[in-house]
Image (cartoon, rainbow, N blue to C red; front, side):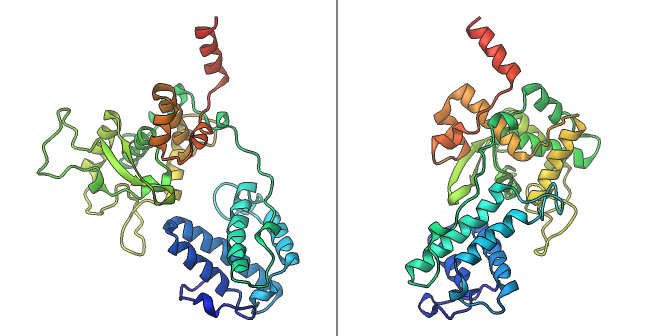
Length: 331
C-alpha cells in the first residue's frame, strides 16, 4: 500500500477503498501512534483491501457493507498462519484474528466520523479469545537456570545467546525492545571511569516501549558481565547491540525479532524443556520475580505497564511452587 498522502477532504463514497486505510494511518500518526503499531495496522488493513479486491475489482469506499465484513471475518477464521510455528498448517489464533479486526474497527470508526456510507465499528464482532493462564508461561527457577546454561559457550553464537537470555531475564524487556537496542546504550564510553566491579557495561538503560512510552530498566551484574563478554568478542562496528551475519537493506546486521525468538527456542530445546519457550516467557519470569520480591507497584513500573491489572496477568507459578509456599506458610 503506497504511503502517499490523501487529504481527508477528498475522501468520498466513490474514492478508491485503498485511500481509506491511508487516511486512517495518517490520523493514527497524527495522534502519536508508535511506528511498530502503524506498521501492523498497515499490514492488517492491506490484507482487508486485498480481500475485497478479490470479489470487487477496483473497489470503492461505498463497496464496504455488512456482508463484506462478515465474509472477511470468516476468511480470517479459515486463513492459515503465515509466520511462526504452524505456518501453512494451522489457522490463525483468535488473538491474531482480533488484532486484524480491531484495526478494521478503528478505520470504520473514522469513516463514520467522516460521514462515509460504511457500517459502524460495532458491526465488527471480535472472536472470543480465552485469556492465556500465566501459569502456562511460567518457568520454574530450575528450568530457567538450565535454559541459561544451555548455550554453547565454545562458539560466538553461544556467547551471544547467553548474553541475550541474561538481558531478557534481567530487564524483562519485550523482544522488540531488546532487538532495538544499540551497543552505545550499554557500552561505557572509553573516557568513562570503570565501575568498581570492572564491568564496563551500564547498569541501567532507557527503552522505548508500547505507546511510545520510555522507561528505565536495570541490569544485574551477571547480565552486564555476559553482555561485556559478548561485546569484547565483537570485531565489527555495527551500532546494533545484537547482530546476525545477514545484513539488512540499510547495511546493518541488527538482529530481528524472529532471530531472537529462534535463539531462545533453541536454548530451551538444548535444555531439554518440552515447553515452546519464547522471549515473552522470560518477560513473565522477570515480572513474577519483581512482584514477589518488590511488590506489584514496582513490577508495574519496571514492566512499563500503564495499568496494574496488566502486570497482574503476568504473574504465574507452578503447582510445585504453590505447594511449597503453602507448606512454608500454612503447614
